[in-house]
View 1 (cartoon, rainbow, N blue to C red):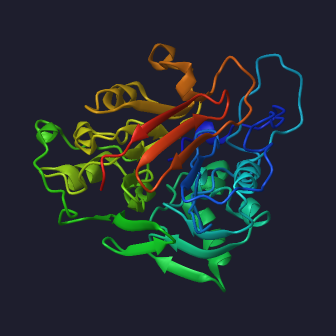
View 2 (cartoon, rainbow, N blue to C red):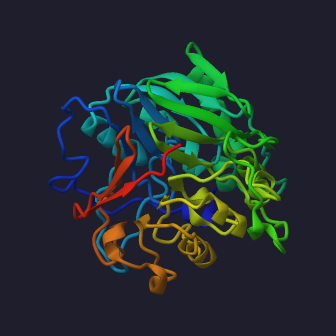
Length: 375
């Protein structure tokens, strides 16, 4: 979900891949039965790469276009060469996992912090299959200025259409299933629709719905249309809802939780308070991963909501919060710290078929293991 001021950041801070980082590692990988996940730092945008044991790759979103969405320079700092773009960082993560093409490229929606990096990425890595929720549904306001128009979904969406020409293209429907090797996807939201019946094992009453009111703000119609999915690998359930909004969460979770509990949860909408309604506590993840930036996402209300999840064991973040430093918590769980040069570190996840989830902070190699409940 896009904030125009954040979108206007110019990337002028130098970035060098640190030793041991995703960007610095070689592309060779040992054979494994595990699912590999890289939550790539795209400065408050979104980009998550999955690589299955069969070496099939799924990339969800592509971050920002070159020149926007980058770290801000320190006051008075001399000009520096531009840092790597979202596409550069995604390509580096792919190389570290031995990925030379994206088998499935999934776009949750067409805001600039998700689809902006598309063209630059495809210049680095080819993609075979393209997945989306359908046509763009958001039009710019009549009084939009030229810069706003340049970032508008209506401007960016044609690039997506052009990219999938000549390739397999899937317009995912709610309830549709897709197998990518041993990773199984079931779509639970898309184009403004959500599940109407509970998934197997779900359907319990959600007492956290009591007294929760709808929200007037949604950050743009494309957020409402976000493609969301439950991903299952072995005993582990993973949830990614893109930037799905508060009101759509209520449709999924109230009065009954149609999704059930999950083990690994990508905090919806970068941790902005347009999502993460109190009823999301019924998802009860063991591990939460937040794709925030230093000044984008990670709103105070959301951090407090996620921290309140009953069985949460680990809350991992791309950046600490400049706005709410008292809510940052243990820095070992934060990939990029505000007081240090922004190196674009990722959060890395390894999931075994038996449900051992190991999360690693690329910045300092701090790692912690969790055990999935079993699907």
